[in-house]
Image 1 (cartoon, rainbow, N blue to C red):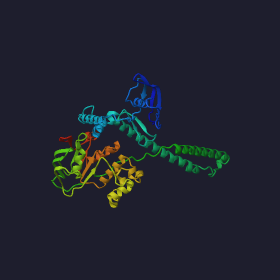
Image 2: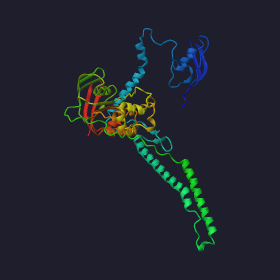
Image 3: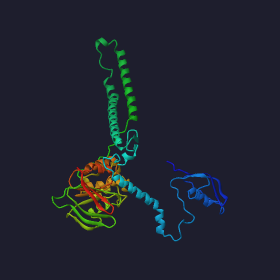
Image 4: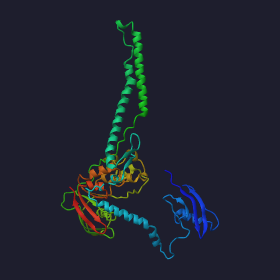
Length: 448
């Protein structure tokens, strides 16, 4: 999609009673580098200021692209301003936008689940969806929201699989007809006495019929082989067994927190995790969800009481997934991280998180979502006794999110999920801990 041009038409700018710009027209298309030359006072700076929208023309107009920037000839700041003050002003609008986004997010999070306004973003916003996953006729546009899409997607997949199966059966029958049946109906069988007189005519008629059938079957076979639909690719299916490992029978909690403080990031009076806990941590941006997971994992020191069961194994899926060796392939990264024996026992392909075609790609070439799936695979291939997932549904496909959520609810071990995903929250069956910025623990409930 081409970028918009900067368009100016019939610009007039009068300064001090003198027309500095008089009917100026200009088109600056993407990729062009246009220099303005002329003596001092002819209107170079004035034209730039009008083009940038810093000054308004007295007549005419300007159509600007959204990413236009303007470097002033002299910095438009007071000489006594500090660099910090200048940067703060430059970022003011962005900070206001972020604050408004946080405010709206908090409002959405407080909408009761039975309220009509409680809808995982795609249901609430989208009127149409375009699915770029492989389909029989390429990308498909679905009218409606995400819930409607799920139903139609299943039906579309069933139609594709049914059409493929029917075409493959027809291809097999045509090959049989063209290559085998014709030879079995050969006209040179022995003659009986009462058909000797018409044998030559009858043999010619049979041969003609056989030839016509062979030609028709061959023609249809060639047409179908050219136009047949591709085999539906096997979609990724999250097939990991137990996400967390069973801890030894013990009445003590896996982790116990008391009066925990991470200055400026987390305040929590207390929390205990049992050996089979399922805890969902919610709250707005900055409430301390990621910080709490880092404290539970032992990656971040905190003031207060933090006790972990001796020998406890912990796995943490962070929001930002970075691999130390981006040039190393997915396959090698998996094997070297787990060890050859474990990687052979739990092959990466068996987890349903990576396509076979991606296993020999360097991890640096993977998308953000693919890197997160690889990081998740490394965790579930050797399940820890305490699994910590920070926004696990970010950057994952909706189907994989659904399968991951289903896997979270059963099995041994303890799992803690930090998420703002409303779809996940609505279906969560375990405990829920809501954090508030600066206030720590807000509520601790159990869903049944």
